[in-house]
Length: 459
Image 1 (cartoon, rainbow, N blue to C red):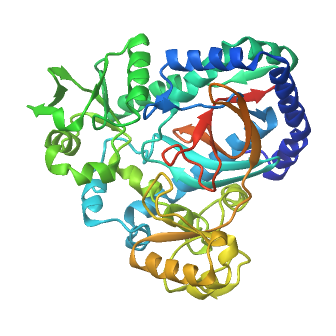
Image 2 (cartoon, helix red, strand yellow):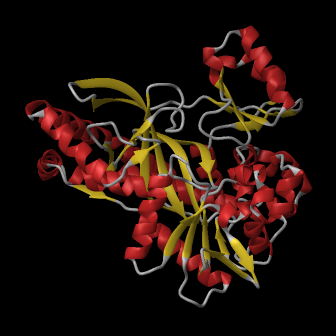
């Protein structure tokens, strides 16, 4: 790993160039026939099926730009944090204290007890981060089933097909990074480690009728184009006989499990074939159910607490303290504050409302998030009581990147300020490409009404 301070300084030094690139893009947009450009872009997005729940996944008229040095900082940060997690993995698998800290349910304990046939807890994952010049903070780790990989690839291709972006890149050369190929390679590599020898058929498994179905179809087509049989199947329609997991007579060797663990458990009795195949190790499941060790938001409470950092290297600790915000499980206990002082946690949370956010330990889409600076003291006290009744984490406020983005409503351009959530996709611990999510509210996620755009790296 490079020195974090040097990388942060180089990333910060790149910021004026990035801002100049944004200004140049907006100038080109103002000089163009915006309606023609918007229609050209939206036609590309429609043709490429970049649709989420019946609406455009990308309503924006420009990509997100980051500098090359900023991308190097992001890669280094991901590498440092994931290596720290790898170093802690043996303890996670064996320590009752850490399992209790993560708050597994009894049903989850039954799932994570099964060895999936390969060592990685999470093969394909995504960090949610805020990059501001040379400062980078990860706020969550989606280690279970990160969505948006195919969408991100197709958004990038859609922008690059437009005349305006071609003109922009003559002045500001850019690199586009794609993830579908990295995902496929990660699936195949894991399948080989698992013991697979046949050329695999890949099953993309999740319930019918979800808003992400268009992305499943995009990935299925990509796998097929790359020479691998692929299908999309509802887990309730799978069959399992004589050690073979299948769908409509087609054997599945790799289960690309887009099905969330919680949603599986809600209908587990309807998914017996999936369960038996997983238990018998009849197919290679990616990700396996053990990804829940890392998907619980309390994993950042473990990473950022000196109590659990024994055995981590100096570079791993540097990555944690540089890029993982102080996080704790909400409980009545003594712990260390961000400045290292010993505190009574609940009282400290009460006194520092304006700099804290509380999140459900295991949920997504912004559900149940409590933002301290948007509450009164009385409301915050009630929130703390709720967080003691069900597993929650508390995390210090991080600086949220905000930028102006143009959108098109079919008649005119509107320019709004959006929070910018930069989310690197990670395969076996290495960042390869990114999705940028944009939101007009404090919560940056597509499920609760935000959107996304392509990410370009400025050379």
